[in-house]
Length: 386
Ligand SMILES: NC(=O)c1ccc[n+]([C@@H]2O[C@H](COP(=O)([O-])OP(=O)(O)OC[C@H]3O[C@@H](n4cnc5c(N)ncnc54)[C@H](OP(=O)(O)O)[C@@H]3O)[C@@H](O)[C@H]2O)c1
Image 1 (cartoon, helix red, strand yellow):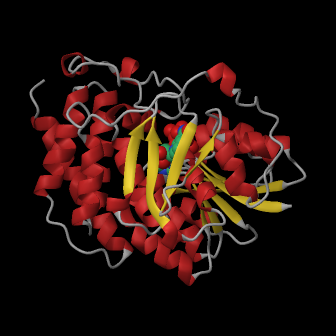
Image 2: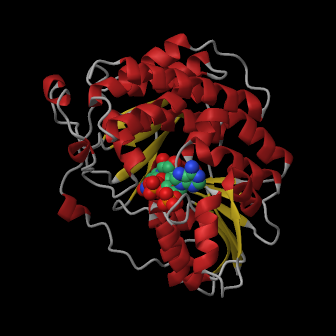
């Protein structure tokens, strides 16, 4: 039986993880859960999975949850510190890191520093401080298993091979909800339209990131640190069907890929039970039904955010953290009707241009860049004509 903690248990990855736990109760025991403010869902999860401790992002949510769970034997903590405490609590082997955004950095690092293996869905901390996270993981004997379907596919395609023999990693991208729109049509896109992802049902932030292709930009940075490979050896291919989840090309020009129907429970379960594969009882991929798979190059004119990811890596230091923070601010503003879809890329671009990057030597360097970029991006959002 593996003891686990889920950070972001009320989200899309969190609930998919709990679905796996529910299917295999003899395999996993949940000892800790954390959420933002959705205390109704967290209460249901506490009753169903009986964790020892949980945490939510504010003291007022924690107080309301304590009232609702007064008769239950669960410790309820609050704030970033409380979430980090749950992430590092003793008696757990694996932490599923599934908070959305930069809010996951401090708790994920706390989990690593407490010696727990990580199943990493929350890509933004890897973007902000990938080198630091990997150094800490090495220092504490921790393994970071990718959950992102593309990185899981690469991880699986690398199994049994030598990293020195890799020519390039090829991340596939569905292209998101707006791939077929013209530059002119992109100008009037509503949040509702941008949230209609063709293949995946995910949280709203990553769904917008998919539509801008920023998600692929973030994933390039994530791949750089997860697999310790230069950005010049990471390519992106648009593959609308999301059947090939990513590929590795080797020096002999062999390509190894991982295929499957789009269902996050497959990569989540692989990270949770590595190296075993779990009998998930999901529908099989029927390639005769799929018929054909299509591929094309990314369009950097309509979707400039992918190149921002590459650029942030080439320049390095705190720039990826600044880019990530600007993206979070811009996506939030778009979802709240504050800016137009095409302005997301403009806000990130201008924030990156204004950022005086420096090396990341400690957590505070990444957090300071995040703070600075949020302020800068907010001011850019407010300065845009309405
Ligand atoms: N969804 C996918 O299929 C998928 C695939 C690959 C990678 N990922 C990555 O996995 C991460 C999670 O994505 P998701 O789609 O599951 O997101 P989501 O559905 O929006 O869930 C986010 C989770 O984080 C919690 N949260 C939000 N803000 C928080 C804060 N400030 N402090 C603490 N907790 C906070 C939310 O709590 P409340 O519910 O209480 O707000 C929720 O539990 C992202 O980094 C995403 O890029 C997701």
